Length: 307
Image (cartoon, rainbow, N blue to C red; front, top):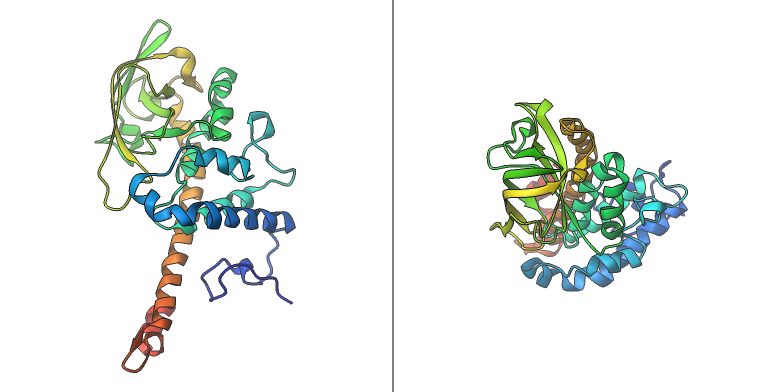
């Protein structure tokens, strides 16, 4: 007998949800999948419409941590609870299940935390790890990536925000645009220019909300407020030199390393979003009646669904 989970319309769930064999998922993965789905159904979905309009409460992260969800990808010494058999499929399940919330992506800051923390975990000093990791992982605080600028989005090597060394501080000037989660962020993993032009002059600094000279404003977006896309102005922000992540002028390599994981997170979320679109379309087509029969019975509609 096949073991199934979730929606059983073909392609509306990953194939292993629908009883097909997989060499990658164990009973532990399945238990975690059920835990995340239960949290989504009980804690998130009933409030989704309101939170998409207003943003969701910050304490939701602490509840997700207490539920055994938010800390799954992080080692115990940093406050997480990675199981002994931890692998990337645990995080894939987490992203996939949370993405069932649709475009609003309520609790989406968890994904942003998962993109902004790795440079600190892998390259940050013990001082920075102690300052940031445990509070973010346990849901007490949040962290954002601050890389893109008004004139440098995909062209990361072209960023113009500068960080001039003055003794034991960096003085940061510039701006960052399309910074997701900026209104919730307590920390910012920030790309700055400490050297000459191009990729060889980029460093990574940890900026902290409340530092004089940081101004954050929410940008208008077409769909929702849950993700809080922001514009950040940096005016003579004095950042302690001990907030340098990794080595000076080596930040571009840290970013390239981090992009691999970022793309994993985004691809997993996009895949589930496509499944949600398909699920909504096929359910509507089976329910909607046209010309005396279900919309899905018309050849052109079946063709579109197949495509």
